[in-house]
Length: 259
Ligand code: IPD
Ligand code: CA
Ligand code: CA
Image (tube, rainbow, N blue to C red):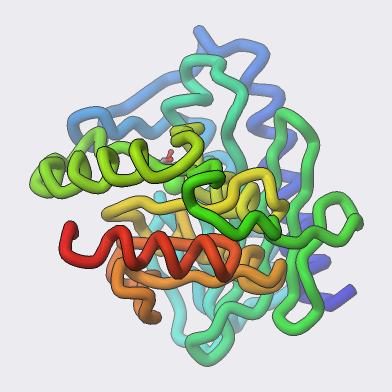
């Protein structure tokens, strides 16, 4: 295993045990609101600190971009961290949330860990070496047609400037696929595409830490990832589509002219 992936896994497991412990006493957790419907808890902060301490100890010169504490350092290596993806689910005891840690090297994703602490599924990838769940190789699905596909998505819930466009897409995919799901943790939605549990996924307005690790999982599992035009730049732009290659192409065609 690549040593940098090894360190990322160690960091994700530390965050995971903080999150797991806290999930047993949800009523005790102090919650702050960043903006409407955007919550952060002391658990998000503690998990992030544990991750950063682990990464810094091994790689003191690497840069960091983390959801709760922001950007620091200047390096060709950048760790992109979401310490708890799916905070709303976590707060409600809805068992779908994860730790997401990705490493970018010279602008390209190089290592990825998405750790589902509830189901104890560790999704990992190293660029050029495939994607895995708990050491088992994963591949995107081979389902060829969008009309037979199960598609993941995320609804807008705190920023509504493009909600009408989203509803247009929702209609198109509800009518054009076998089903839509909104599990509530984007990093895991991407991991599920990589594992072939979803045939595709789309969402608007995500942050880099929601997508960084998951996008490498999809690519290493043989899928395609793009913005709403199918191009690169989704990490900066925030709109993302991914899927197995055949479903991806049909999703891009469905979005064309609607978003
Ligand atoms: C959120 C989740 C959710 C997505 C949101 C994200 P958070 O992350 O990934 O599925 O719809 O856009 O912000 O805030 O729980 O880390
Ligand atoms: Ca997130
Ligand atoms: Ca988060």
